[in-house]
Length: 230
Length: 79
Image (cartoon, rainbow over all chains, first blue to last red; front, side):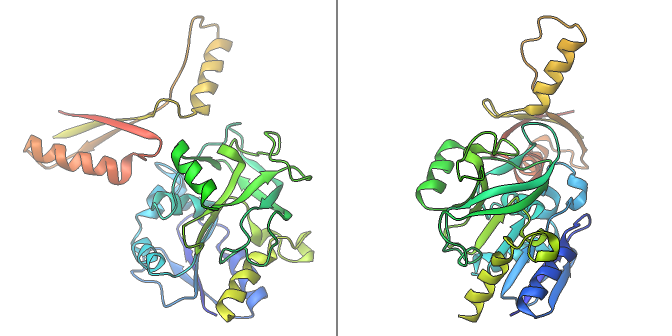
């Protein structure tokens, strides 16, 4: 089990996700600087949360064109699983590995709190240890998490099971009040057609052990471990 | 040669910052403001002297990096 976390200038959840993956898998994680040309052979690549390049131009836009991302995109297209968390999700959209984009929160406010999510696809590389329609609690912390895509793209995502996570209330209803950022159709996370590239705004690494106040995020990392071990 | 590039949100794309500006203008007493859309203005200095080559280059810059074609349109002039 070899995981690599890409570190951009301005990443700030890179070490959190390293700690979470190492705790769950028991294996050391590579930290790869954005200026490197290649990612060493990895079972999984993680794009962490943060504010890469100070969010200049658009969130994730500069990072998407950094030297290391050429190799990440190449490897993702060749089948290496990639998890993009928060800023990592924004970067995945800017590289067009995932469709759509993340706009400024509809409230214009930075949102930092726990949200409820419904796991709509429990067969991806990163969600196979959840049950379909399970309601989980994971924190968000972002100013630009308002998922937007053209209507045809949204319909395509829905009909192909690629909406992986949706913001819901604690009873599992996808209401406007449960939506922290105005995301279309309460979308919190989506995947590519293979289920091996996943982007999500919430931070599973922030709730992966009881000392952090919850463990609902832990199974994202157990899911990838299960797939890699299989 | 200089490229003056304007990047604007596509019609129908929500612009929460434009809305906030609209509200602020109303609060300041500016009556009759019907809508506000916020965009970006970028100037790029080019060594290129051939206008048609410059146009081609700037067009590619916009598509590859400066604008996000999911939500934004771009337009530019060369001076």
